[in-house]
Length: 287
Ligand SMILES: C[S@@+](CC[C@H](N)C(=O)[O-])C[C@H]1O[C@@H](n2cnc3c(N)ncnc32)[C@H](O)[C@@H]1O
Image 1 (cartoon, protein in one colour):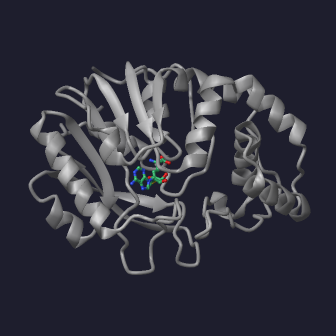
Image 2 (cartoon, rainbow, N blue to C red; image 1 turned 135 degrees about the horizontal axis):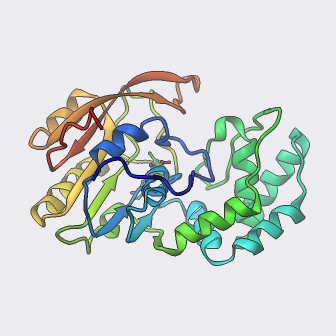
C-alpha cells in the first residue's frame, strides 16, 4: 500500500496530556499494514484512532480509558451528539474567570451525564493548558487558562466524531481487561502515562489513582502475553534506560517529540520518546 488518502480530517475534541498529534507521522509509520480489530486501551484524546479512521484503516475498534468523565463524554458523543450540542448552547458560560469557576463548581456537583459532558468540553477549552487534573476527592481543580479566543467545537465537528465513535466499542476499564480478548491478527496500541524522567518530572495524574511502577510492570507482562498470542502490539513510552531494559526483547525506535504538557512548571519542552513494537517496522522514509 502506498500513501493512504485521507477522506476527512478527524481530530481530537479534547486537548489531552500526552496527546499524540506531533508524533503522528512517526506513529503512522509504525502501524502494521493490515490488522483486524484495533484496540486503544489508554485512549485519552484518541489522536491515533482519529488518524486511522481518517485513512479508512479501521474496521472495528475497541477503545477505553479509566477516566470516567472522558468515557461518559465519548459515550454521549456516540449516542446523542445533537443533545450534546444543544446542551453546550444552553449552558452559555463565557470566557471569563467568574464564569469558568461557576462552570467548574457545577461540573464537580452535577450527576447529569449530558451536562457534565458539555461542561468537560467547556473546561477543557478554557482551563490552564487544557489539563485534566483532579484532587484526591476526585474534584476537577485546574485553574482558569486566560486564552484570548478559545475554539469551541461546532455541532458538525461533534456529529463527525459521533460517526467515528459509532464504529467503536467504548469501555471504562483498566488496560489489562480491555485487551483480554484480543486475538491473532488484531492490533493494540498502548499509550500509557509515561515512566517519569525523574521523580517529579512527568504528569501522570489523569485520575486520582495515578499510574505506578507496578502498573508499568503489569503493562510489560500484558505486552508479552499479547505477543505470545500473535497480536501486533505497539507502545509509546519515555526514552529512559529502564524502558529500554524492560522492552529489550522487542523492536524499538527513538523519535523526537515535543511534549505538550510537562508538569515541571508546565513548560513546553522538546525531548525523545520510544516507539516499541513486537514486529519489525519497514523503513518507510521514501514513502
Ligand atoms: C498518555 S495518555 C493517552 C494520550 C492519547 N494517546 C492521546 O492521543 O491523547 C494516557 C491515558 O491513560 C489513561 N489511564 C491511566 N491509567 C490507566 C489504566 N490503568 N487503564 C486504562 N487507562 C488508563 C489516562 O486517563 C490517560 O487518558
